[in-house]
Image (cartoon, rainbow, N blue to C red):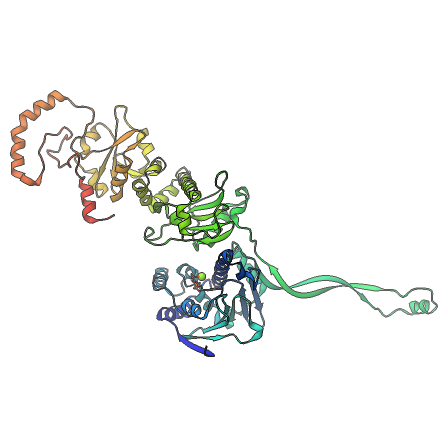
Length: 591
Ligand code: ADP
Ligand code: MG
């Protein structure tokens, strides 16, 4: 390797660095959270690999994070004993960033009003490392991967378009494994190089990191030391006469020394008794773990015992991320015996339509070297999945029963579509999903109602649950099909979201009542007068024939209807055909 090689940053990185140095002023302290989170990720990776390759631990057994501060020179050094990086990884990880990540980051910043924007956003877009430049002029990363014989040093400066990589040659700086990041703080930010300041930030931002975090701190203890005092004349005489022993005097002094001090509590929150965990702690855990800044709508902490044992905390986020169904969401963090395994297995633990649920799952029954293939085959996972799904539904039901109706409105607004997808994709769970659905209706145009509310207010003679699908509330309200039902005071659900109709058609029934589309041709309101109908049909048979002839292929048939009261005619769909709404849907390919 050449002694020191210069590399240009990828254009996105330069842009990002520029932005960090020149526009992000608030919340600078997030740099520590980001660096600790990277250290924790690196330790997670090493711990995971060491399960199958225990020799990886040989060089350094302790998995921890140590933060050293030098306040006189304004230097912070953060060392982890994690997986480290090879030379190539330094180039790949600290010189380039995923384009999608930065594009989204820039957009989010723009949305939160460019200049002086909140640095807090930085961690959410896979660009956390660069937050070091919020406070540092110069950043040095010295790192040793178990894959590499050598230790390498990455060095970058704020306001530069390039960085360097060289081999670590300073014997004093060699580490057995892991990464040491040294921040040379900007003049105005040197205040961060105080153990107390660091300690407060850790308590604020990183209390849920599951590896010990130590800071280098000055400590003191008191000890008694003997002092010699000049004796008084009287004492001198007495001593000379051999009458008294020499008097010993002591005094207390504080002995100062420096040592590492453990700052965080490392027991994972999900191992604690739910009774001892406050809502605040759950909220904080959620925000820290998933890099969110809003409290969750709901959480559920549980242990299952018996056949399969695992612990879990699930959360319903307060808002939806765009395009959740198509992007990897990293929603579920899987642990086996407290070892973090992956956040890439959510598809195995939850059905796709519940991918908005976030959480941690810790199992004692899975092997530590668990892979996606094992998960897919595993009977244990099938049982876990079933229980997790049930708990997720209980949690959502909990929101719907909350005294504050806004909570569920908010949930529905964000995730209603997912539950409708569940109606289509998860028939076995219909009885759990159906009570959670919400619709507008002919008798409730402003407030969504549940199917239970619908059923409760059904008329005595009413057998079915009626619905009409339309592209808007206005067109549903004005549909001629409604007339007869309104006269009878039968409530009709207004399915105005493109997915509503599919969901309802998949459910087929609710509490043994059929869903009936009032726009289909054979609508039976239970009030047929067969005799009279026959008579009328006879009377108008020629009229119908004539109209059919005029319209030709445009309609399948022309019939006498018993469901209109003031409109002269109405276009309906055939019993087995698509409804007008479905036809619109298919044409627009909204699904
Ligand atoms: P993210 O953590 O979202 O991937 P970052 O910008 O924070 O994005 O870090 C970029 C990458 O740099 C990480 O994914 C990791 O591969 C590498 N990295 C950063 N810090 C460390 C570290 N302390 N040990 C090992 N690798 C690290
Ligand atoms: Mg990171």
